[in-house]
Image (cartoon, rainbow, N blue to C red; front, side, top):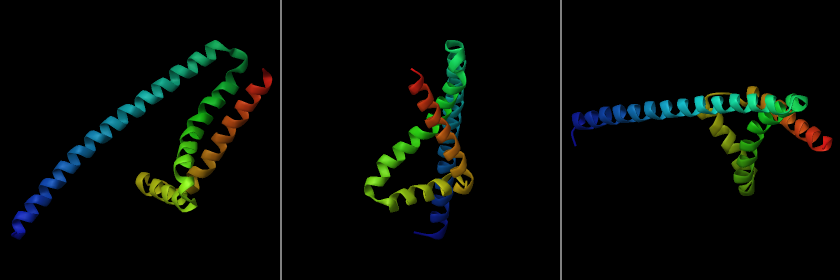
Length: 125
């Protein structure tokens, strides 16, 4: 194999991978937009349904948007050891290029809000 052949192959692979990643980014962006539209529709439905519990229900919605994926990650990684849990969060930081120093307090606050809101509404009934 000559150098020019391998360089041409590398250029072709770069173009193909760039094209596929832009399609992937587009589909992820459209899914994110759809998720936000669904969330807004759900919030308006909740507000219209129970005006007395609205703030608690909003807390449940946002809290469980954080808690559900977090619990799924915990269920999938923790049985294989604490090292897998740490490995996942290192991957998450590198993949999304965001530090857990910022995300952890936000996740803790929003998750706690969801748990407290759930407890309040369960004990009210």
